[in-house]
Amino acid sequence: MKAVIVKKPGGPDQLEIANLPIPEPKQGELLVRVHAAAVNRTDIITREGKAGYAANPVLGVEIAGTVVETNGYSSLSAGDRVMGLVNGGGYAEFAIMPADRAMKIPESLSFEEAASIPEVFLTAYQTLFWIGKLQKNETVLIHAGASGVGTAAIQLAKKLCNAKVIVTAGSQRKLDFCRELGADVTINYKEQAFEEEVLKSTNGRGADLILDFIGAAYWEKNLASIKKEGRWVLIGILGGSEVESVHLFSLMAKCVQLTGTLLTPRSDEYKALLTKEFMENVGAYLERKEVHPVIDTVFPIEMVDKAHVYMEENRNIGKIILQFME
Image (cartoon, rainbow, N blue to C red; front, top):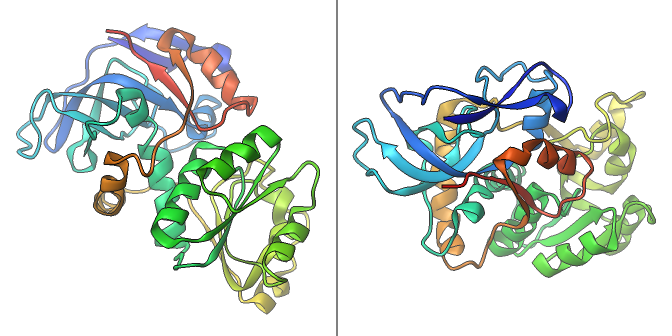
């Protein structure tokens, strides 16, 4: 089978399509014929050799395809269309998926749309509700609003909690798209002081919840933007991982709850429970397309290096998809 591996840690030029044996599923696993896979930041970190949890030599953590072997798992049959998280191995014609995190693809969705769902929607659901404890009519500040997770989080926050959604992005094109998805307040971080805009739009109170993809560069601004007793979930470090000076008393004075999280290194059990709850609460919205994945560009697997460059240049609104031709 065709599969994408990394020759050695480094840039997109280190990606290589190799011929590997088709993997064999163990008890509790499915063998899936991959039709589409999605590109994620974690794939880039893995390619660069910075992710110690990446044991699979093949990149990719989310796929959509058809079941080839169920290995005795009674809830699915060969030929079923499924999407879900995998423990690496997604950039390949065949991949192993833990059966208890396979989600049946709604009939209304294509394989490319389905591959756009697992990582970003599960991350958005986890950070908004499991960690962020978002409640009805609260205010959430979502950075990188036009990213995959950002576009998912906007929709989930509006649909499930009728939240007031404030987003930041770096271009008017991205901000306009966020507003189409339901964002109430859009802020161009290149032209506006977002902390001032957040306070202005909340009558000086600040946001109840912040989803932070940026990290160090936004430390002080996020602290100024958050409401007293607010929740702050750190899920990315696009703006650096080291803050020069941290005044812990500032966090204490505001009674801020700061939580860091990643989804990929979580346990299989955690991901299975998250997948189950997500589909129970969001599956019907996906079926009716009241909540929908956002695809920016579809690349053939042979152009995987171009797909990585495209993500690293932050050109995308929504997901970047790799397609496997029949």
